[in-house]
Structures are given as C-alpha cells and as structure tokens.
Length: 311
Image 1 (cartoon, rainbow, N blue to C red):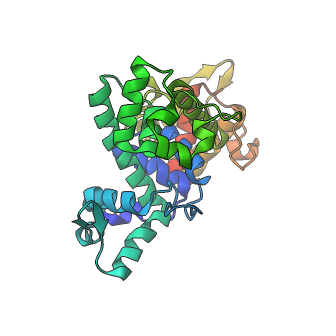
Image 2 (tube, rainbow, N blue to C red; image 1 turned 90 degrees about the vertical axis):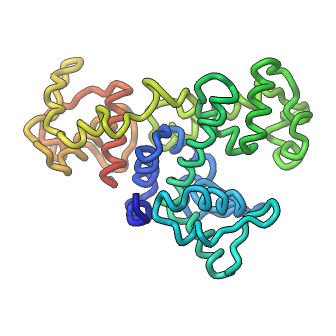
Image 3 (spheres, rainbow, N blue to C red; image 1 turned 45 degrees about the vertical axis):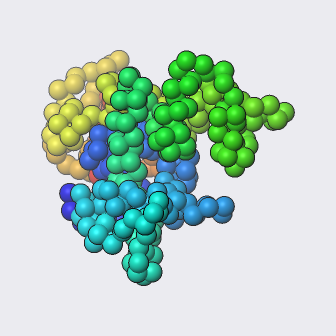
C-alpha cells in the first residue's frame, strides 16, 4: 500500500473501513475506539497530554508506530527521520517532527496506524494469554500499554477481584473515574474490564456499528476479509438478488453494479434495521422495490458498503 492509499479525503468511516481491511482488525472495534477517543473527530486534541487525532496517540507512541510501520504504507520519509535516543523516539529536524506528528489529524493515516498498532498488540496478547484477543483486550493495551495490559489481563484471569488502583497507582491517579467509584472505593480488575467493554460497545453502537466492538476479533464477529462475502457482494452487487426473500421482503433487483443503487440499498437496509445514515430511504431512492430485512450480517454488509464507497 502506498502513501496515496492512506492520505485521501473520503471521510472517517471510509478511513476506518480501509484500515480494517488492510490489517484484519475488526471494523466495529476500530469504530468504537475512535468514538471513545475523539468522538470521530480527526483533529481532536487532549487538554492534559500530547494526545491528538482520531485515536489520541501521544507524541511518543505515534513516533514509535510510524517508525515501526510507516514504510509499509508509503511513509518511509517519516520513518527514516525518527531515531532512538535512550528510551525516547526523537526527530532532529523540528519542522519534520511537526509534519510527522500532524499526520495524526489525517484520518486515513491515523486509522491505519491505530489498526496496525492493534494488530501488533493482538498477536502479543494472544501469545501471552493463550486465547483469542477481544476488542476489550486491545483497548486495555491502548489504555495501559502492552506491558500494562499483559499484567492486567493475566492477573484478572486468576483473580478478577484485585484492586486496579493497587496494581496501577499512576494510572489510577490520572484516571480516578475509571479506577474508583463515586464513593471513592477502588474498582476491581474485573469491574474495570467490564466497564471498558460496555463503553466500547456503547460508543460503537452510537455511530452505527452492527456488532459488539468488545467481542472476540475473529470468527463470526470479525469483519469479512478482502476475499470474503462482503467484497464479493460489493464487487458484484447484482448477485445480491440471489439472496431471495426474507420474511416476505425481496432484495433489490435489476441494478447491476451501479454504485448509487448499491448505496440506496445499503441506506434503506440500515434504515430498516433502525440505523440513521443521514439520508431518508424512500421508494424513489430504492427503485420502488422492497428490501431485504437485515440480519446482523446483512446490516454489517450494508454499513460496510456505505463506508467503503465513502457514502
């Protein structure tokens, strides 16, 4: 993938969809993480740290992920400028450093690096834990760093009642609402984990996710890969007619590979599922035919079609 592929202006959801396909990290997880971190605002900046962008990378984390993976995505100029000095990543040229850090406000670059970071953490956590990683596991790695997440999750597996504040005093001082309840009582690891899972799912659902962002990142809950059902349906939209009828509703037919018809079907399908896409589904924009009643899988397909087409 070259730099052109991750520096477009197709919108936040399109950027997240592209990053998901490039790395295999679940779309719903990446969407929920971005919603929690920045409210899907690619120019968001934290008031108490250097965190910025769609996924609120702090300066050092961003320089590290660009150094490690930038060249894979056409950002060799940035990766080559970053060096290690002691335990810190540095860029000697101030203008170059500013340019690299400002990439956090590019949704395509930010989403791709967040997905790549999640992919790296997924492999490391699965090796450490001996099980499949979940979206919540990845969010813990984003929040505590990989080492902190390993410690948190290993301890929680054997003793979920341990105080989170006792294990992570510095993080607890900076994030009291996460580590303590309203009465000032320290929350357990299990409680903190479940609260993160609930927040991740709620955040993703609020912006149109069709699956659980906190769930296992493989199998039925994962986004179809580049060779999967989603890509086949997107590339050959007319084949959707072969799905027949569901609950008496027929799939849109006679539209071929027309992108606007695909968008109309997807918007109307999501409207039937109760998801607001910002465009009304009317007989005019769905060619006056009935629609497939979405299951979770077809709703996901519809949402991903819109995201990929930049709609």
